[in-house]
Length: 351
Ligand code: KG4
Ligand code: ZN
Image (cartoon, rainbow, N blue to C red):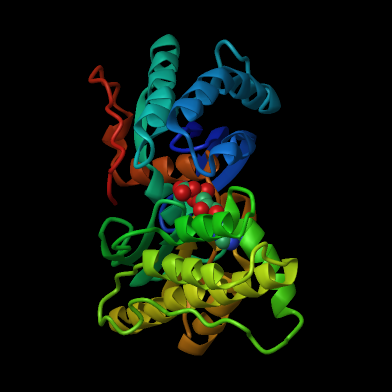
């Protein structure tokens, strides 16, 4: 089955054409065409994503990326041989989501193909399926860490899963971005903090700063990252400005250690409580090397199979939207029935 997938939930405009075969638990995916335009540098000026600008850029880039993707896949751009169109319907910024939905529905009408709504977080959740190694063994736990979400999910099967923990305030990626801003680093801050922290860690020197590990002993699977960001802010206020490059690196390291310790410890508790056999990881923060190293150690120690998506599928992309759509279609083939009911964007859609 050929799925044309569209993602516009935040500041990445992305379109991919996937050939999807096989069935659960081991579907197979081949990327026939894939285009992505990151607006990050345009939003850097605002220190975060500016919704009206995101919408304008999506509108401008969608037709360009569509043509690029179809040409790459060797398809006729006016009448490609596809089976359906998949589009992110939430969560995310509603003005941004609407651009993708309207574009997908217009294509659906033009080509007489069904349009399948996709939950962006299911994209992150099922992205590890891209590497069709071994079937996922249940029960599984998924750690979803992005700019908008920090969630632990307990999966009993592909059909039955529950969010068992979430952030009570800022998401972990958001905390990386905010702390980067405090350190005068460009948006998005995650990769910047991670680069400084990595360099500092490799020196193996005694840490100069120590930040709190919020909610570590809260006896639930929830997170809180706004206090950690405030702790960094207060520390910076006590230091002499401007911060030296060395101090910035030391702060980045101390922040990353604290932020990731909490993710790893809560994940450990969840694996134990649910007797998980598999640990899935997804979302932009899954690109963080320190997190990957710590989760690898955790999985080894717990005898759990660790499934990360490939690096290119950690941050937002359209391939994961195609993967999630295929999983949903396998579970419920009636999704391919043509419908005339217009789809609605839902900025707060949950798993
Ligand atoms: O999944 P994603 O692309 O978008 C959302 O759905 O939110 O995640 C973006 C987030 C940003 O907050 C970004 O700073 C963070 O992922 N991120 C990282 C790294 N790469 C991206 N955080 C920590 N370390 C990284 N290497
Ligand atoms: Zn995302």
